[in-house]
Image (cartoon, rainbow, N blue to C red; front, side, top):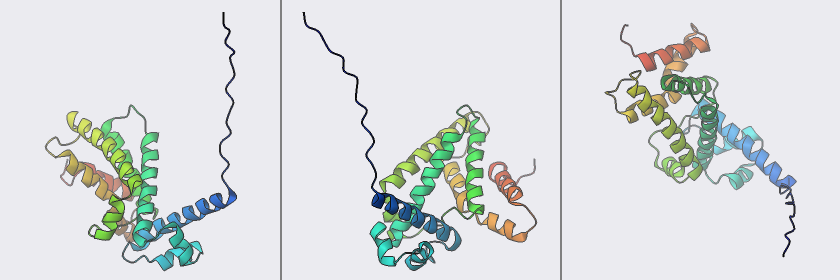
Length: 213
C-alpha cells in the first residue's frame, strides 16, 4: 500500500522590478500625460515632439527611445484614453438602464474634454491612422468599448428609449463625436454657463434633439 505525501505549494514572490525599469515607466507616464494635454490644447497638427520633450523636461533623443514618432505618441495617448474609458465603464452599475449607461459615458467624455484631458486628433491623416491601426492595445480597447456601447444602444432601441429607425452604428458614431464637440468650447467661452450646465445642455441636445417637446 503506497502513501502519498501532500506538499503545501510554495508561494513564488513576484519578480522585482528594477529601479531603472521603474524610472522608465515613470518617464513614459509623464510623456503620455504631456502628449494628452498638448493634443487637447493644440491638436495633433500643431503639437510638436520638441514641445512634448520640453514639457517633460527631457532631450528629444531620450523621448524617441520611448516613442519613435509623433504618431506613436498620439497612439499612446489614445491607448491611455481607452484604458480610462474601460475603467469608467467597469465602474457603472451592471443593472443600470441602457440609456442611462450611455448618458453616463457621454457625460464622462464631455467632462474630460472640458478638463482639457481629451486628445484631439485629425480625421484625415494616413500616417496617424496607420499608427492607430497597428497599435493592438488601442484597437483592443476600442473594440471592447464599442461592443459595450453598441450593446446598450441596441437594448435602448429595443425598449423604445432610443429611435429604432437609426442604424446602431450611426448612434455609436454620434456619441463618439461628442468627445470632440466644439459646442462645449463655444459655450464655455461665452461665460454664461458653468461647466455642469454646459454638459447638461449638450447631453440634452445629444439625446433629445432640437425639437420642442
